[in-house]
Length: 501
Image 1: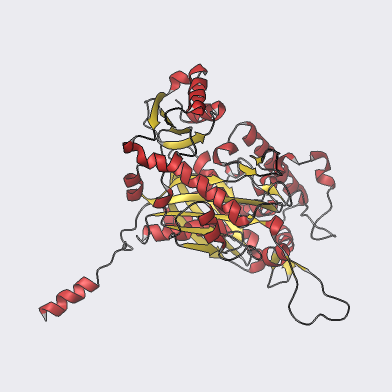
Image 2 (image 1 turned 90 degrees about the vertical axis):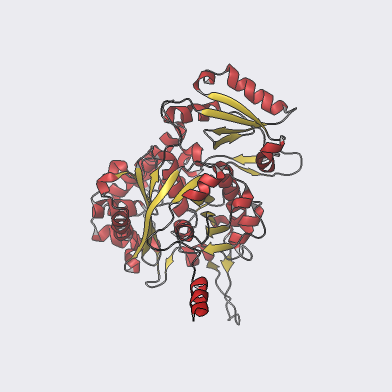
């Protein structure tokens, strides 16, 4: 009987966290591609390839080896024509191990955020300790559909995959824009209100680029051209520069001809892009020697009537705040996805939050809305735009009446009062590294940091050799990835100023 009892005890052991002792989840690195306009600069790249670029950049910014990634979740909505298992493609194209499990997530516009939430749950419960999560979309490459069956006399009509799978309310058989018009009417939000908000979004995005804020989260995309021509380099979002303020009030309504309020100008645009972040338990971060950028405090989902999807964040946000033990007054920044201007205005009104703290660097209206990507993009933006100790809320509505919300807190990445450490990863006989070092020495920033070099060829630096042998020169600031290939003095100065060093 004693033997039986001990056997039962042995078999009932659990190798994961209990609900009373969940692991803390931190974000080690976050990155995204620029967002290309519909059939714009990124039209030749599939969603999985864009996802691969974002994954690789996020792992690079985390400063860990690709072999440390245990599992990958990526959101992707319009998957037709992409080939089998889009997340698996993105993972392998990014150079991660073939033994890495992957899952593609589809929660419409909230897909990228839901991927983060599911990965966080895995880490909280001890199923994994290091994961990548994010989202990707190439609306430029979504095909038209031709229904199977006999072709009737007179021919058949092609179905637009973007509209059918991504932007149509199944239950009311109307475009999502018509649902948004319903919200505008019910909440008395005028076209003038929406136009004013959209113009604000464009101006804030332009200011963010001017002040080098967006660049921190973006990794460039290089597109090979015909033989003999240099690569096409896309390094910033395409939409924010296309605005014509003089025509804004003259644009026709897009969904309702009579008494409509939504236009192409105050709605988000069809776009291509991908975003990803590296999540880990606090213990794994310590083991890997990677300094966390932020921690995930709480998250939530909520749902309402499908036609009322624009106000679904208004139900999800209070749940996440309650779980975090926070009040709305504790939130320094809000990122509410701008599927339409009316979405943000409706939730500001519903929650009674300070509009000056909402989408302070613009949003999907002025930047773009690759639907599988956007949920991760707004989380990533908070990671880089919050100041140490501040709380931020990211929330995104999704078709069918749902919404997802994540609360994060920015963590300090340096010791107060000490000069930061700038590390150059190099090797013997590296002319590019020598040029980069000389550029630093000649700059006015040279005395604002401690400089050190790491020779990746030395046996004790084998970890860095595996990561950076084809990438040098690579720079870390306070043990976090900063830049590679060349010195970006403006980026370095902004990072030093942000840390008040």
